[in-house]
Amino acid sequence: MTEWQEISGSVTAPRGYRAAGITAGLKASGLPDLALIVSDVEAIAAGVFTTSVVRAAPVDYCRQRLQSKPGASAILCNAGQANAATGSQGWIDAIECAQNLAQILNIPSDSILLASTGVIGQRIKMDVLKAGIPELVAALSETGGDSAAKAIVTTDLVPKSIALETMMHDRPVRIGGIAKGSGMIHPNMATMLSFVTCDAAVSPSLWQQMLSRAADKSFNQITVDGDTSTNDTLIALANGQSRTPAITEMGPEAEKLEAMLTAVCQHLAKAIARDGEGATCLVEVVVSGATDDKAARQVAKTIAGSSLVKSAIFGRDPNWGRIAAAAGRAGVSFDQENLQIKLGNFLLMENGQPLAFDRSAASAYLKTAAAGAYLKEDTVLISVSIGNGGGFGKAWGCDLTYDYVKINAEYTT
Image (cartoon, rainbow, N blue to C red; front, side, top):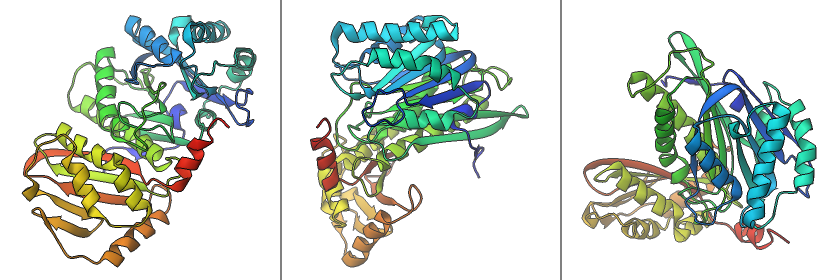
């Protein structure tokens, strides 16, 4: 029994938030492409961003804003143009976006955070975006989380959102989140955007620490294709509107809130991995027996990111040798005589020795997962033990299909 329950509303489930998503005309497809999340009061803000040295202007903008002031009232996100590799003009466009929105919301421009997604090397269509902002602000609603989730996607097949609620001091505390991501997904961070809202009161430094740890256990543990993006952004707001006492240091309440934040991030991360371009199933890799959790996570994401493992899963081939090979090259030292590998309930290797197993039944297990209900019965579980240590970690990915190549071969054409 968990200490929280899932509720509806995504980023507008927590108190004091409104959101909206509209079709401004930034995408040639005519689909929604401009999203806004607003807190009724200035919120504590934290962020985790791409490690790429080729960064989008909104990434640098957010980093600077959060370094000078760990607070924000609004997040503006456009889809269609990445505003990455756009030179000094990209920075000018980012500043103009914030100033334009700030004027309409009547708040300081340094209270606005930005994100963009789309084709790298393309500037935002500024005239279109600025024309859409008044409509976007007018559309803000306490039930607008779902429309915002739809407006940030690109090649995603489905929008991604969740909200959880727990009780603290006899009052409900909620965390909601939305995300986008489908291709160019790899740890540190994945090609993704995610926005999280919370109505608890948390000190800025503690909120940043919580978010960074949650990212390491979620978004930094997913991979689709080994490519990290220029625009990866995870922003979390905490506005204190639950009216519960402020959390300023680690303790039972902080641990509970961080666990719920991690659960939100992991749900969104798994949704991104499952929605990997062309994917037919989610792959969850669980590694135990490592010297510490960091080592276990490293082995797990190496296996999840192996093109050979991913291809075998798509071919419904229980080729466990590829799993063993990926574990061995993960950069974590272990005795191969301690290696154990399971595919679902099928034990394939024990104490470093191959075991006889029903290959047809194992293949059927992979086929069943591919036909399973979305994010419920569509998960292939790979369990690996590398020793007797207490280190434990998980990673998520998907299979590698013909459609992945087709989607990305024709991305701009």
